[in-house]
Amino acid sequence: MVREQYTTITEGTQIERPENQAVYKIGIYGWRKRCLYLFVLLLLIILLVNFALTIWILRVMWFSPVGMGHLHVTADGLRLEGESEFLFPLYVKEIRSREDSSLLLQSTQNVTVNARNTEGEVTGRLKVGPQMVEVQSQQFQINSKDGKPLFTVDEEKVMVGTDKLRVTGPEGALFEHSVETPLVRPDPLQDLRLESPTRSLSMDAPKGVHIQAPAGKIEALTQMDILLQSSDGTLVLDAETVCLPELALGSHGPAGSSQGLYEVCACPDGKLYLSVAGVGTTCHEYSHLCL
Image (tube, rainbow, N blue to C red; front, side, top):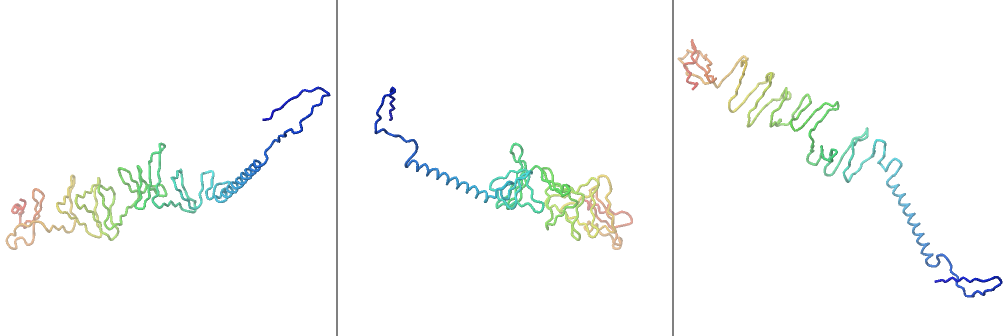
């Protein structure tokens, strides 16, 4: 500790100063000074290295005033050139490709596109996996380039908006419920077959059902009854020949009496049978066939 002493003297008085007075220098000297210079030099080296790394990162990542590499910032959003890989979910409003190229979404597992509402709940989902394509939505619709609905599916019905629906499978089409269509026809030179293996087959129309085979025949096969019923009309069989080969045949009369002519008779329940033709009706003679 340095002690300072103050001495008051008058003019003309001489005071002798001590010869061995200590002198104190202000500053950093010796090894402290060398450490300080070394520290400043180390900071300068770190600054130069950081500056060089920053320049290298800018060059490698292709930073520019308009964006980074193939990612350009425009007034409409972000524009990405070439192929890109996203490791986490991507949230966007719209994705579109260039006018001269197609848009490709590719993944090693599956590609999932979700639509969410304001509360974050998923309202629609499109999932393309290795085994199937899954769509989860209230309604699925495919439109033509003119905006015409071609295929619409919801919880209540499936609607095909095209002028023609063609099924090319060898087993045809299987419907578990009803089908509504104005026309059913096969390809040219192919047979049309309507079949119900374990249930009944019903064809209904408010203005009539028209069955036509211009170049072939119409065949109806069933294990039980075929019912032709008209509630307000007439059943007409209009043909050159009406063949009923399995009708029950009554006993023959005397030889040569019928000359191969028979009479078609009807039972009260509608059953038909044949009776040998005579001068008058002979149906009552063979009415026992109705029993």
